[in-house]
Length: 92
Image (cartoon, rainbow, N blue to C red; front, side):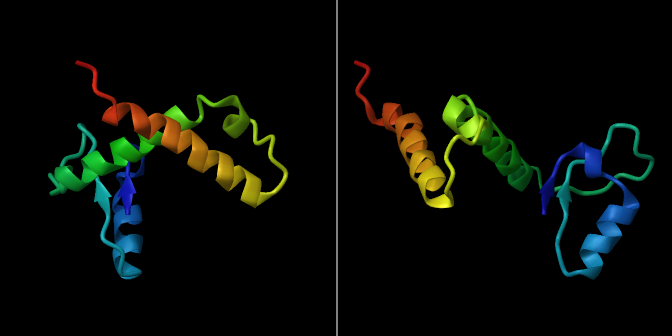
């Protein structure tokens, strides 16, 4: 499970481990015992969070105008394609 520093507590970590889930949570700065964290995997959480932020810039997605899940998913695909396509445009 990828989570931010707000979920860095021993109780959360133990409950996840008991369920067979490996927690990837960055330790808080004020934590007494240093806990190892896979920061490479933690970077993926940030990427996903930024992607959701970019998708929410589309008003139709943020306000959920679409009534059905199929139409919402269709617009999510269009919005993701619009965000993805500029990476392939030749800027030279």
